[in-house]
Image 1: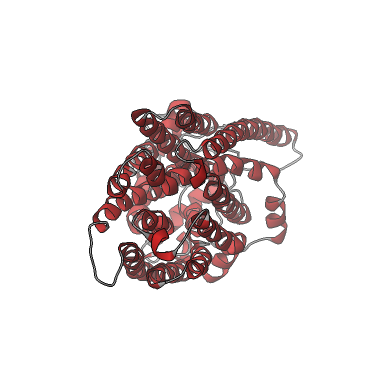
Image 2: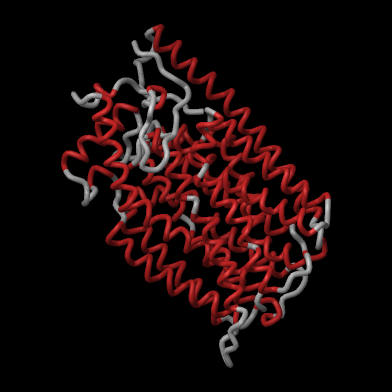
Length: 486
């Protein structure tokens, strides 16, 4: 009987392992085929590179537009949205919150619909719908109309991120999944990097009838509709039916994923497995850490321009400078796989990223010094987005033993992560400027809770893996290849 390991290395995009500790935990590669481990790895590299080019790259591009459309209200605010719509006090916070209400209203059911309808049809339809709603925000005249549009935008966007994460769990082996999920989430800081300079450029437009904030919504919505339509020809449902994979590649990846215990793309959802996954406290505990990192990212994405503006910069300079924390975030997401390898664990890497974001919030409270506060924002971006590159992928990788677990884990991860919008939309109040003590204090508390959740999950996974080993040795259960990754 082979000995199972409780930790699995993650590789870089297109990289290949350079030592035996990088091999899959579920036994030798010879069980998959008669090929040597080296030949199996070369096949796996070639397969993953093809999925990266054909599916992952498109998913990142569409998700950049998704995040940009979602955060466009922050850009519009700085270039005159509130003044033109007569918004005062916390009206902007209400609009931001209503997006989250719409998003969460259907999120938990989205993956079950996707499994029935298919990603190749559902995801492009969602993209076209949210692009249309985003563009329609450019023709509103009252804040009530804005509230309705934000609610509809949330409903249109729900299901996209969870759906992409689910099909990624179908296509990628467990050891290769975390890095790809992190790369997918690179779209979040990239959208912020692009939106800042975009808003700065739009602030110089003087059109007789179209206001500057209207340009933001119109241009981003139209671009999204065009890109989403391409998804009908790019996205695939699962490897077994993938149009651009050869018969040999399909047989190889199906055998590989069956050997590691994560084959589920073409399997039907089991009601029993779904119920068990929904009642698994460990999955919910893991998402607390995801909630914390999403809270930090949301604070940077939506309120960085406002925070920088309160430091005395003009609207145009605020938007341009707001890209800086996201640049740091993009770098740390790209390095997230290396951070996991350096820490030799996902849970410790998650704790480190959350601690960096927590330090950034503490600096924002402690001082009004402009250089120090910008540095604090950069730490929030670096830590928050690094966590986004580590924690969601860890959750999905660690809960991929059945298609129901994958569907539930990805849906809950996105659902709980998106719920952070309720918090960050309502704790950074205009009346609390420029220090925003309430907002950053709440962030510190949530980030500390996220660190605790990582530690509790690590302890639980270790106990479960040891229980699996004891049962396998005693013969009370059949040996199964799946083990929790921490």
